[in-house]
Image (cartoon, rainbow, N blue to C red; front, side):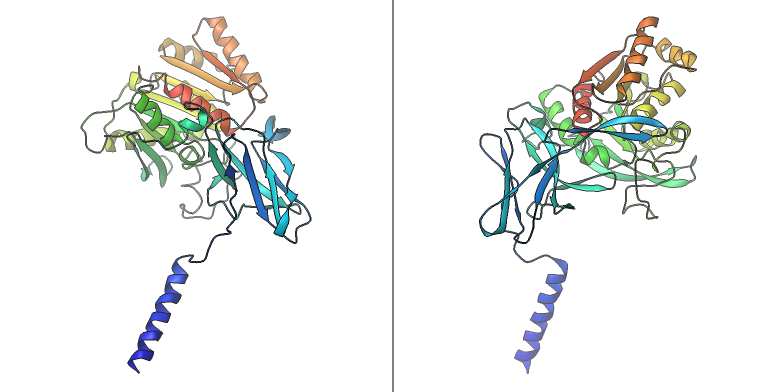
Length: 394
């Protein structure tokens, strides 16, 4: 009887363990496989599939138009390539040699988008999950900066704070540099804002903020700093799964008709950070930057608080001077140490980026416009952060 009870107990433990942990084997297929020549091979097991394709940002892009707030923006949609069926129902495709970068992809199996079951690495962009892989062709290329290296590492935490202006608790992400926890030094702060449909996890996940900052600081190319990544959607507390509601983000529903809410409630963010972190306060120690919607919000914040941010970065998002000339004049009357615009040449935002640059030039205001290839894509925004961070707090 004792043996029966023991065996029953072991069986219950086994069932409980299985319920808690996936104990079965993986697919046994290597995908993606990064080859020595920097090509990448994708594999998918689909013996009953008729057509298998891969779509990702490592392929030549397709230009598509997307309407946001009545404005037509051009986006680079991922290309598509066919996999060939081989022995035992395994489909395969090998890319051309790739440059160092963080790439996203998924499979299309008979027209249905499918994750790669052999790849556990995934990221969420707005409401879409994709598989990812990192490749570095040369030391110091973008993929190298987005990777983890044997350098001192900072910390990333998710914090809840009270926003009296909005009457609710909200969530933000904070990067603190290596040595912060055990030291007494005060650090300058970069407030880094996401785009439409994003949230407080966007810059830390897709943006690779911690990896970029760790590597730049370790090389002495960037000053140690605190990076604050708030949720810029005023009516939503936090990323999906963290908020009290079941908000489903999209490009359209993540913002109101104006950015007034970020200007009104942003002092709550700064107050929380300055009261809970060792912050070097003041104009020369405070920067704001953002991508797309966050770029426009950064621009509006600089207009609303012209003596608050000594460094301003607008990544594929700006406000134009029409009707705001006096506010822009006030920004530059405070003599910002850096006013930096980055935009892709095929990005629909480039028209307004150049317009703002030309207006500032006509006034003699020092503004940097960095024009990169490509459009409204994360590949550009990670590059802009890498470049912008190196120019802060010098």
